[in-house]
Image (cartoon, rainbow, N blue to C red):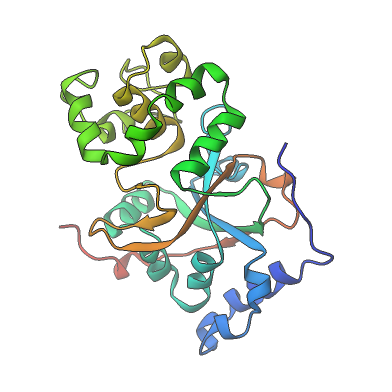
Amino acid sequence: MTSFSMPESDSAIEAFTSIFASKHKLDNGNSVIKNKYLQQMAGRITRGSKKTDFEYLQKDGPAVKKFAWVMGDDGLSLFLVQSNLEALRSIGCEDKWIRRKLENGEYFQLGIFYRSPECLLATWDGVLSLIDIYYPKSISAKIRRHEKALKQMSFDEIEARARLSYLHGATYFDINELAVNGNSADPRFMSEERFLKCEGTLEESRGFLYNRLGLAKLFDGSGFTKNSSGQLGVREYLQPNIPVRDIPGFRYLDLPIDTTDLMPDS
């Protein structure tokens, strides 16, 4: 079970909420909030079209996604000094992706909460530690077998081999996009059940990490977000995906986006 260290008061959450609400009236929100407050906190961008999409940190729920990607103090600070759109761009969201979600009737919210001990920096060591803890040995052992290759080989190298083998020419992205509510009937989509039954090659293991944990093309194990140009952004973390009602002090903040501010699709 995820454990949270609850401060004596909600000072950090209250301070962040207040500055966020009035950030356009201030010169610099980050100069007003104490660093010790930000360092207590974590945040997650969640999107959805209905209330139930926001019940868990990651909307698909732990049966599908055991972990949720969250940001720390450096990522949260962006939302105090930048517009909502600028902050989303700064953490790696592309305009065409944002537009697609908005056109599909989804909206964005920033969940803020106190960081738990189970919130680990998303390095390879952090990811593998979470897999060891929250997945059965039959799964973690298959992935651990390829630890050295996962750390040393590039995503493109592994994907090229996967396209010649079990992906049959498709990309990891192609297969991942087939999922509806986090699952797909395509045999190339690496659910827990399929991964348990397959040999567990390096290529299949990387597919499982992509489909189930969200370790996509830009993940390099550095612990930082990265854009398509290779520029590092803010620190990123993984933590167990639990109901937000079980997180002390949790609060959602609306992130309205004006579509006229988005760059045209190329």
